Length: 356
Image 1 (tube, rainbow, N blue to C red):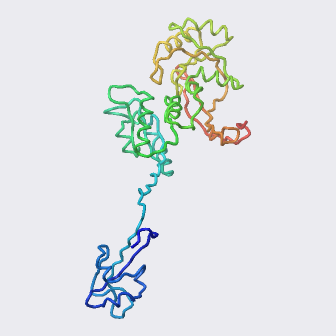
Image 2 (tube, helix red, strand yellow; image 1 turned 180 degrees about the vertical axis):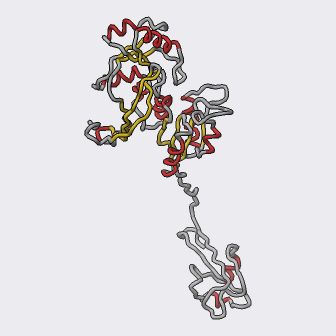
Image 3 (spheres, helix red, strand yellow; image 1 turned 60 degrees about the vertical axis):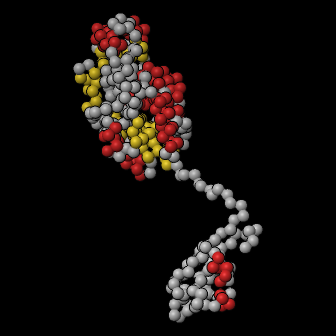
Protein backbone atom coordinates (compact mmCIF):
# COMPACT_ATOMS: atom_id res chain seq x y z
CA UNK A 1 0.00 0.00 0.00
CA UNK A 2 1.38 3.42 -0.94
CA UNK A 3 2.31 5.37 2.20
CA UNK A 4 1.76 8.66 0.36
CA UNK A 5 -1.99 8.04 0.30
CA UNK A 6 -4.38 9.81 2.63
CA UNK A 7 -5.14 7.92 5.88
CA UNK A 8 -7.63 5.11 5.18
CA UNK A 9 -9.52 2.53 7.20
CA UNK A 10 -9.33 -1.14 6.16
CA UNK A 11 -11.86 -3.70 7.39
CA UNK A 12 -12.08 -7.39 6.49
CA UNK A 13 -14.00 -10.50 7.51
CA UNK A 14 -12.13 -13.62 6.45
CA UNK A 15 -13.73 -17.11 6.32
CA UNK A 16 -11.63 -20.27 6.47
CA UNK A 17 -9.65 -21.19 3.37
CA UNK A 18 -11.49 -24.44 2.71
CA UNK A 19 -14.95 -22.85 2.74
CA UNK A 20 -14.43 -19.90 0.40
CA UNK A 21 -12.22 -20.03 -2.68
CA UNK A 22 -9.73 -17.33 -3.40
CA UNK A 23 -11.47 -16.00 -6.50
CA UNK A 24 -14.68 -15.56 -4.49
CA UNK A 25 -12.99 -13.27 -1.95
CA UNK A 26 -12.43 -10.61 -4.56
CA UNK A 27 -16.14 -10.14 -5.21
CA UNK A 28 -17.72 -10.62 -1.79
CA UNK A 29 -20.10 -7.76 -1.11
CA UNK A 30 -21.85 -7.38 2.22
CA UNK A 31 -22.72 -4.45 4.49
CA UNK A 32 -20.29 -5.81 7.08
CA UNK A 33 -17.36 -5.54 4.68
CA UNK A 34 -16.66 -1.82 4.92
CA UNK A 35 -13.60 -0.33 3.31
CA UNK A 36 -11.14 -1.55 0.70
CA UNK A 37 -11.21 -5.20 -0.40
CA UNK A 38 -8.16 -7.42 0.03
CA UNK A 39 -7.31 -10.70 -1.65
CA UNK A 40 -6.89 -13.79 0.51
CA UNK A 41 -3.13 -13.72 -0.06
CA UNK A 42 -2.89 -10.13 1.14
CA UNK A 43 -5.10 -10.85 4.12
CA UNK A 44 -2.93 -13.79 5.19
CA UNK A 45 0.12 -11.51 5.41
CA UNK A 46 -1.63 -8.95 7.61
CA UNK A 47 -1.12 -9.44 11.35
CA UNK A 48 -3.91 -7.06 12.23
CA UNK A 49 -6.69 -9.06 10.55
CA UNK A 50 -8.15 -12.05 12.37
CA UNK A 51 -10.73 -14.71 11.55
CA UNK A 52 -13.35 -15.76 14.10
CA UNK A 53 -15.63 -18.76 13.58
CA UNK A 54 -16.29 -20.91 10.55
CA UNK A 55 -18.08 -18.20 8.62
CA UNK A 56 -19.06 -14.65 9.46
CA UNK A 57 -22.68 -15.20 8.37
CA UNK A 58 -25.54 -17.23 9.70
CA UNK A 59 -27.43 -19.82 7.68
CA UNK A 60 -29.61 -17.14 6.03
CA UNK A 61 -26.51 -15.38 4.78
CA UNK A 62 -27.61 -11.93 5.97
CA UNK A 63 -26.86 -11.41 9.65
CA UNK A 64 -23.42 -11.64 11.17
CA UNK A 65 -22.60 -14.30 13.74
CA UNK A 66 -18.80 -14.28 14.01
CA UNK A 67 -16.79 -11.35 12.78
CA UNK A 68 -13.84 -9.11 13.56
CA UNK A 69 -13.39 -5.62 12.19
CA UNK A 70 -9.89 -4.20 12.58
CA UNK A 71 -9.23 -0.56 11.65
CA UNK A 72 -5.79 0.47 10.50
CA UNK A 73 -4.87 4.11 9.99
CA UNK A 74 -1.82 5.04 7.93
CA UNK A 75 -0.24 8.36 8.87
CA UNK A 76 2.70 9.60 6.86
CA UNK A 77 3.97 12.05 9.52
CA UNK A 78 3.13 10.84 13.06
CA UNK A 79 2.94 13.63 15.66
CA UNK A 80 2.56 13.74 19.42
CA UNK A 81 -1.15 13.42 20.25
CA UNK A 82 -2.83 16.50 21.63
CA UNK A 83 -3.63 16.32 25.32
CA UNK A 84 -6.15 19.01 26.32
CA UNK A 85 -5.46 21.00 29.46
CA UNK A 86 -7.12 19.67 32.57
CA UNK A 87 -10.24 21.53 33.60
CA UNK A 88 -9.59 23.86 36.53
CA UNK A 89 -11.72 23.48 39.64
CA UNK A 90 -12.93 26.64 41.35
CA UNK A 91 -12.07 27.01 45.04
CA UNK A 92 -12.35 29.48 47.92
CA UNK A 93 -10.21 30.07 51.00
CA UNK A 94 -11.92 30.22 54.40
CA UNK A 95 -9.73 32.34 56.65
CA UNK A 96 -9.74 31.63 60.40
CA UNK A 97 -13.05 29.73 60.45
CA UNK A 98 -15.25 28.88 63.41
CA UNK A 99 -17.32 25.72 63.51
CA UNK A 100 -20.46 27.73 64.22
CA UNK A 101 -20.12 29.59 60.91
CA UNK A 102 -18.95 26.75 58.68
CA UNK A 103 -22.14 24.72 58.01
CA UNK A 104 -23.91 27.54 56.14
CA UNK A 105 -20.75 28.51 54.26
CA UNK A 106 -19.99 24.92 53.27
CA UNK A 107 -23.56 24.39 52.10
CA UNK A 108 -23.30 27.48 49.89
CA UNK A 109 -19.95 26.39 48.41
CA UNK A 110 -21.30 22.88 47.82
CA UNK A 111 -24.24 24.23 45.82
CA UNK A 112 -21.78 26.08 43.60
CA UNK A 113 -19.39 23.15 43.22
CA UNK A 114 -16.49 24.89 44.98
CA UNK A 115 -13.53 23.31 46.74
CA UNK A 116 -12.93 24.79 50.23
CA UNK A 117 -9.52 25.29 51.81
CA UNK A 118 -9.39 26.53 55.41
CA UNK A 119 -6.50 28.51 56.90
CA UNK A 120 -5.96 28.33 60.67
CA UNK A 121 -3.54 31.10 61.75
CA UNK A 122 -3.39 29.91 65.38
CA UNK A 123 -3.96 26.15 65.31
CA UNK A 124 -5.08 24.10 68.27
CA UNK A 125 -2.99 20.96 67.83
CA UNK A 126 -4.73 18.69 70.33
CA UNK A 127 -7.94 20.13 71.72
CA UNK A 128 -10.07 22.83 70.21
CA UNK A 129 -13.49 24.35 70.49
CA UNK A 130 -16.25 25.55 68.22
CA UNK A 131 -14.55 28.97 68.11
CA UNK A 132 -10.98 27.67 67.68
CA UNK A 133 -11.35 24.31 65.91
CA UNK A 134 -8.61 21.83 65.10
CA UNK A 135 -7.80 20.85 61.54
CA UNK A 136 -9.38 17.44 62.13
CA UNK A 137 -12.64 19.03 63.27
CA UNK A 138 -12.83 21.13 60.11
CA UNK A 139 -12.15 18.14 57.86
CA UNK A 140 -14.88 16.15 59.61
CA UNK A 141 -17.57 18.74 58.79
CA UNK A 142 -16.69 18.88 55.09
CA UNK A 143 -13.75 21.25 54.55
CA UNK A 144 -11.61 19.70 51.80
CA UNK A 145 -8.15 20.84 52.94
CA UNK A 146 -6.68 22.74 55.89
CA UNK A 147 -3.50 24.81 56.11
CA UNK A 148 -1.88 25.67 59.42
CA UNK A 149 1.65 26.95 60.12
CA UNK A 150 4.31 24.32 60.83
CA UNK A 151 4.83 23.29 64.42
CA UNK A 152 6.95 25.85 66.27
CA UNK A 153 6.28 28.67 63.80
CA UNK A 154 3.94 31.61 63.98
CA UNK A 155 1.52 32.32 61.17
CA UNK A 156 3.17 34.14 58.28
CA UNK A 157 0.91 35.42 55.53
CA UNK A 158 3.68 35.18 52.91
CA UNK A 159 4.34 31.52 53.69
CA UNK A 160 0.60 30.89 53.66
CA UNK A 161 0.25 32.48 50.21
CA UNK A 162 3.21 30.43 48.90
CA UNK A 163 1.60 27.22 50.15
CA UNK A 164 -1.79 28.04 48.66
CA UNK A 165 -0.29 28.94 45.28
CA UNK A 166 1.60 25.64 45.24
CA UNK A 167 -1.61 23.75 46.00
CA UNK A 168 -3.40 25.74 43.31
CA UNK A 169 -0.87 24.70 40.67
CA UNK A 170 -0.43 21.08 41.71
CA UNK A 171 -4.13 20.36 42.09
CA UNK A 172 -5.23 22.50 39.14
CA UNK A 173 -7.41 24.77 41.28
CA UNK A 174 -8.49 28.34 40.67
CA UNK A 175 -9.10 30.47 43.75
CA UNK A 176 -12.06 32.80 43.40
CA UNK A 177 -11.84 34.59 46.74
CA UNK A 178 -10.73 34.71 50.37
CA UNK A 179 -13.54 34.76 52.95
CA UNK A 180 -12.72 35.96 56.50
CA UNK A 181 -14.85 34.16 59.08
CA UNK A 182 -14.04 36.26 62.12
CA UNK A 183 -13.33 39.91 62.91
CA UNK A 184 -9.62 39.39 63.48
CA UNK A 185 -9.17 38.02 59.95
CA UNK A 186 -10.79 40.91 58.08
CA UNK A 187 -7.71 43.05 57.48
CA UNK A 188 -5.27 40.40 56.26
CA UNK A 189 -7.87 38.60 54.14
CA UNK A 190 -7.39 41.39 51.58
CA UNK A 191 -3.60 40.99 51.76
CA UNK A 192 -3.83 37.23 51.22
CA UNK A 193 -6.24 37.68 48.29
CA UNK A 194 -3.85 40.14 46.65
CA UNK A 195 -0.89 37.78 47.12
CA UNK A 196 -2.90 35.02 45.44
CA UNK A 197 -3.31 37.26 42.39
CA UNK A 198 -7.01 37.90 42.91
CA UNK A 199 -8.73 41.13 41.97
CA UNK A 200 -11.78 40.64 44.17
CA UNK A 201 -10.52 42.28 47.34
CA UNK A 202 -10.80 45.65 49.02
CA UNK A 203 -8.38 48.52 48.62
CA UNK A 204 -5.16 47.46 50.33
CA UNK A 205 -4.52 51.04 51.34
CA UNK A 206 -7.55 50.81 53.65
CA UNK A 207 -7.12 47.25 54.95
CA UNK A 208 -5.92 48.49 58.36
CA UNK A 209 -8.90 50.83 58.59
CA UNK A 210 -11.22 47.86 58.49
CA UNK A 211 -10.08 46.84 61.98
CA UNK A 212 -8.46 49.84 63.64
CA UNK A 213 -11.25 52.08 64.95
CA UNK A 214 -9.08 55.22 64.84
CA UNK A 215 -8.08 54.70 61.21
CA UNK A 216 -11.66 53.70 60.44
CA UNK A 217 -13.04 56.99 61.77
CA UNK A 218 -10.47 58.94 59.77
CA UNK A 219 -11.38 57.09 56.56
CA UNK A 220 -15.10 57.68 57.14
CA UNK A 221 -14.52 61.37 57.84
CA UNK A 222 -12.37 61.71 54.71
CA UNK A 223 -15.29 60.25 52.74
CA UNK A 224 -17.45 63.17 53.87
CA UNK A 225 -19.50 61.43 56.58
CA UNK A 226 -19.97 62.58 60.14
CA UNK A 227 -18.23 60.72 62.97
CA UNK A 228 -18.11 61.17 66.72
CA UNK A 229 -15.25 63.31 68.02
CA UNK A 230 -12.31 61.17 69.11
CA UNK A 231 -8.66 61.16 70.20
CA UNK A 232 -5.91 58.54 70.46
CA UNK A 233 -4.35 58.24 73.91
CA UNK A 234 -1.00 56.57 74.54
CA UNK A 235 -0.12 57.27 78.20
CA UNK A 236 0.09 54.01 80.14
CA UNK A 237 -1.19 55.73 83.27
CA UNK A 238 -4.03 57.52 81.45
CA UNK A 239 -2.61 60.94 82.27
CA UNK A 240 -3.40 62.30 78.81
CA UNK A 241 -7.15 61.83 79.24
CA UNK A 242 -7.96 65.21 80.91
CA UNK A 243 -6.28 67.27 78.20
CA UNK A 244 -7.97 65.25 75.44
CA UNK A 245 -11.41 65.72 76.98
CA UNK A 246 -10.79 69.44 77.31
CA UNK A 247 -9.49 69.78 73.73
CA UNK A 248 -12.49 67.94 72.29
CA UNK A 249 -14.88 69.82 74.58
CA UNK A 250 -16.54 66.61 75.67
CA UNK A 251 -19.10 66.16 78.42
CA UNK A 252 -19.50 63.04 80.51
CA UNK A 253 -20.21 60.27 79.90
CA UNK A 254 -17.41 59.55 77.44
CA UNK A 255 -16.43 56.35 75.65
CA UNK A 256 -13.03 54.72 76.15
CA UNK A 257 -12.35 51.65 74.04
CA UNK A 258 -9.66 49.40 72.65
CA UNK A 259 -8.84 50.25 69.03
CA UNK A 260 -9.19 46.72 67.59
CA UNK A 261 -12.01 45.19 69.60
CA UNK A 262 -15.19 43.41 68.57
CA UNK A 263 -18.57 42.55 70.06
CA UNK A 264 -18.39 45.48 72.55
CA UNK A 265 -15.34 43.94 74.24
CA UNK A 266 -13.15 46.43 76.14
CA UNK A 267 -15.62 49.27 75.47
CA UNK A 268 -16.39 51.40 78.53
CA UNK A 269 -18.90 54.17 79.18
CA UNK A 270 -17.14 56.37 81.72
CA UNK A 271 -19.12 58.80 83.84
CA UNK A 272 -16.16 60.46 85.58
CA UNK A 273 -12.62 61.61 84.93
CA UNK A 274 -11.19 59.05 87.33
CA UNK A 275 -12.88 56.17 85.55
CA UNK A 276 -11.83 57.41 82.10
CA UNK A 277 -8.19 57.73 83.24
CA UNK A 278 -8.21 54.23 84.75
CA UNK A 279 -9.81 52.55 81.73
CA UNK A 280 -7.52 54.26 79.24
CA UNK A 281 -4.40 53.18 81.15
CA UNK A 282 -5.66 49.60 81.39
CA UNK A 283 -6.23 49.40 77.63
CA UNK A 284 -2.83 50.83 76.70
CA UNK A 285 -1.05 48.36 78.99
CA UNK A 286 -3.04 45.31 77.90
CA UNK A 287 -3.45 42.89 75.01
CA UNK A 288 -6.62 43.48 72.99
CA UNK A 289 -9.41 40.96 72.27
CA UNK A 290 -7.71 40.09 68.97
CA UNK A 291 -4.60 38.90 70.83
CA UNK A 292 -2.47 41.87 69.82
CA UNK A 293 -0.93 44.57 72.00
CA UNK A 294 -3.01 47.73 72.06
CA UNK A 295 -0.77 50.68 71.18
CA UNK A 296 -3.30 53.23 72.29
CA UNK A 297 -6.80 53.68 73.65
CA UNK A 298 -9.56 55.51 71.83
CA UNK A 299 -11.46 58.31 73.55
CA UNK A 300 -14.81 59.07 71.90
CA UNK A 301 -17.77 61.33 72.23
CA UNK A 302 -20.82 59.47 73.62
CA UNK A 303 -23.66 59.53 71.10
CA UNK A 304 -27.22 59.28 72.35
CA UNK A 305 -29.81 57.38 70.27
CA UNK A 306 -30.61 54.04 68.69
CA UNK A 307 -27.74 51.91 67.41
CA UNK A 308 -27.90 50.06 64.09
CA UNK A 309 -25.67 47.57 62.34
CA UNK A 310 -25.75 47.81 58.55
CA UNK A 311 -24.42 44.89 56.51
CA UNK A 312 -23.63 45.55 52.88
CA UNK A 313 -21.76 44.27 49.84
CA UNK A 314 -19.38 46.63 48.08
CA UNK A 315 -18.88 45.77 44.41
CA UNK A 316 -18.56 47.68 41.12
CA UNK A 317 -21.41 45.53 39.77
CA UNK A 318 -23.94 46.85 42.30
CA UNK A 319 -25.86 50.15 42.03
CA UNK A 320 -23.82 53.04 43.46
CA UNK A 321 -21.06 50.53 44.24
CA UNK A 322 -22.74 49.16 47.39
CA UNK A 323 -25.80 47.09 48.19
CA UNK A 324 -27.33 46.90 51.67
CA UNK A 325 -28.26 43.30 52.52
CA UNK A 326 -29.74 43.73 56.01
CA UNK A 327 -30.06 46.19 58.90
CA UNK A 328 -30.23 45.30 62.59
CA UNK A 329 -31.38 47.52 65.44
CA UNK A 330 -29.58 46.84 68.72
CA UNK A 331 -31.15 47.01 72.13
CA UNK A 332 -28.27 47.74 74.51
CA UNK A 333 -28.21 48.46 78.21
CA UNK A 334 -25.46 49.75 80.45
CA UNK A 335 -23.97 46.98 82.62
CA UNK A 336 -20.84 47.41 84.77
CA UNK A 337 -19.72 50.44 82.83
CA UNK A 338 -20.19 49.01 79.34
CA UNK A 339 -23.06 48.75 76.87
CA UNK A 340 -24.23 45.15 76.50
CA UNK A 341 -26.44 44.10 73.60
CA UNK A 342 -29.40 42.16 74.98
CA UNK A 343 -31.16 41.48 71.69
CA UNK A 344 -31.40 42.80 68.14
CA UNK A 345 -34.19 43.15 65.60
CA UNK A 346 -33.92 43.03 61.81
CA UNK A 347 -35.55 46.01 60.12
CA UNK A 348 -36.55 46.57 56.51
CA UNK A 349 -33.62 48.13 54.63
CA UNK A 350 -36.03 49.39 51.94
CA UNK A 351 -38.18 51.31 54.40
CA UNK A 352 -38.11 55.11 54.08
CA UNK A 353 -37.23 55.22 57.77
CA UNK A 354 -33.82 53.60 57.18
CA UNK A 355 -33.14 54.01 53.47
CA UNK A 356 -30.98 56.93 52.43
